[in-house]
Amino acid sequence: MRKLARITILCTAACLLADQQITAEIVYKKGEGWSTQAPGSDDATESTASAQFKKAQDVESSGDIKKALADYDALQRKFPFAMSGPKAQLKIGQLNERLGDYERAFDAYGKYISKYPQGSDFDEAIQAQFNIAVRFLNGERRKVFGVKTFGSQEKAREMFGTILSEAPYSKLAPMAQFNTGLAYEKAGKPADAITAYKTVTEKYPSDPLAADAQYQIGYVYFMQRREGNYDPHVAEKAREGFEDFIANYPNSEKIPQAQDNLKLLENKVTGNTLDIAKFYDKTKNYKAAVIYYNQVIKEQPDSDAAKTAKTRIDALRNEVGVDAQTPGPEKVETSARAGARRKLQAQVDTAARPDYNGPPVAVPEETPAPTPQPRASTPDVAPVPPSEPTLPQ
Image (cartoon, rainbow, N blue to C red; front, side, top):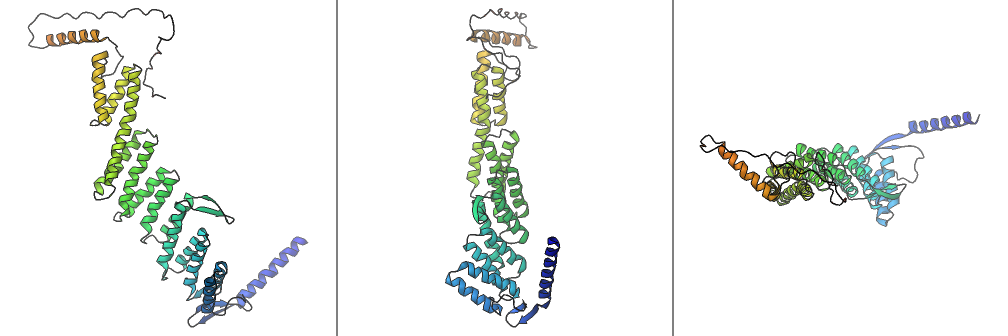
């Protein structure tokens, strides 16, 4: 019975509201535009749009922002087609900003943009939305039940996306797209940031921001490399990003910075590999050391690190007889033994020449390695080297 009574009451209320809507009048007044008026509705609202707008302005001037906001909102509801409607809607956005309710202000400006696309304040509304989105990009905290809680790069991206959707050809569109990339960067999503920056270069190639977007593409990869991503493709993409920036935007003020980043990138790439080579060199794993020294030379043949690697490879060849070009099982020899072997090899090479007329050169067998003796203690026992180089921990 109670459920039936509730349904009856709801239906009666709906009928009354419907009847009120039916009896509402649509009125046109000169200088006011079209409006809807229902008998006995909103007694606090003035009878004309101009009077209501003046009332809201007076209340705003008195400093009662919340009351003024309510009055402008009442104008929008009672006189939706009034001439002063666009100004009232813009005021709703501005007053919400003054109250610090930036999300509601953003939505109010969006309502102006969608409802009054030909309005005289259209550009101002877009700019206001952009400014609010930048606030969130810079760390503005969201409100939950009226209380500021936490910053949201996701909200910033959402707002920039709304601007791009509402005004894709406005002067702020390229910057909104660029800032979308920045928001992804701050949120720790490098792949999405790079995609956003590429959209700037592809969709707005003639805009000055295209140069900054190309620089950021290289920079995002560069930061991944500096933060410990050893994927060689990341280093290569960073290099390509900066080189494309330098080639396509030679007059940019960021050219010196890009060049410095390329040098740092070169040092970072070769520095890590050189450190690994030195580690194996120090632990007498000469085969692995030579592999990584050669990798340094291959990656950056003209760098200082490559010169260091070449010098050390030559030293290892002379000191311990490691074959630097074709790494194989290492042969650790004393300096005297290595010298004798090189002298003998020179004799063999000479005898192999087609114009050699001297006596044949006998190649003596190498002295067999001594039989390993049991160790008396463990400190002089070295671990068996791995079959494949293992990166240092």
